[in-house]
Image: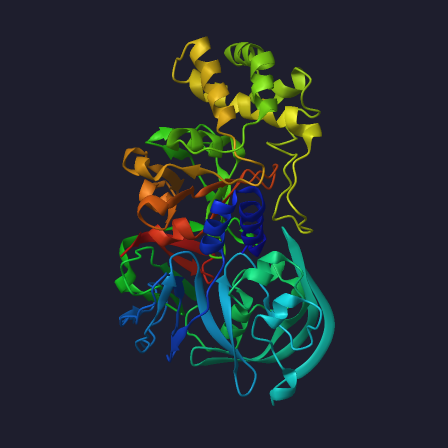
Length: 513
């Protein structure tokens, strides 16, 4: 996940929104159990549960094929799925012999498997979920080494154990996983999922244990080193989604996939180009940004400077930053003059005394990264607020200069973006009645533009007068060289069928069908 990001998303929505939006946040971001799976020779498919208010019996899925470039393998049998609410996606696994069932997030943003332990005595969250009982498994192997994973709003801790893990009809032998004995966060207390099954790389695995995906390959349980996601965003349809281990389901995408290489092994991290609003550049990622493709994150997270531009374009209301407006009022003309005189943009804020470093501070250093190795609760340091506001103003003003706007128009625009700044933790809402008037937001990946329509990037909960519309964009600021960074979560993966090709170290996107 960043389950780091799930925690990041959930906490501000619970604590900072009004009670009206807190309920919406819970419906959107907490997960509800389910799963069905099916047998395969060389390919395994796992049915995912999409949250929907009225549960329905699922339809049949078929025509699972190997990915081009690999040897052929047999198709899988059909799988039936159920829906519950349209927000998160889940599957069921079994641990032990006989299998003890757990509902988990299949998460490309982390690498460990963990579930609550029967030895979890002092966390209420454990008593609200299925708990692993080692004494009831004939294939349990004791390990006992301590383990701890930090998230944005808390942590889980426990110890490592080893047992067989069943995914569909596929059994991974002697898989190391974490028995969680402490789950103090509200994220886990309120959640409907039991645990997390990480599909990231071993480089970010706590304890350096081999992720379950690696052991599927090492034990030759699947014939191709690839897995793929289809996440259904249509609430009127019965199928919730699907993961295919060892291949792709050609029924769930159109055309060809656009592939881009993994740029940093750990997360499924790729390089991304410009972000467009209504086909116009935002001027921020034109020279490239990094992006993590993360099935464990509901929304899209990106640099505050771009999120503010998007929020302005879609009329999303966030927290007003007085510091931002003060910087624009006091230094806006100076920034404009320096840009006109071709000063280096990354040095302007240090030249006028708002930043300490010449271009090395990076945008919004006061907002801590949720993907740092030691993740702490996201917080905003007002000591760096002036620098942060200045760096954003440089980006905005530089972008407007390209459009040959007047000085007054440019500074007015920067002030308007200050009004659209989200809180440091990022939530924003829009008027549901305006969806048809909103622009597309597009991402450039592998030289191809991937569009998201308002219906795809706005999360709409409820119907009629009680409907609430939440912007699918939240702020996330990470300093160079690791950033700027985007998180492409379920909103993006719902529109675009996603292939994670471990054998060739690349990720592919094609329009979902």
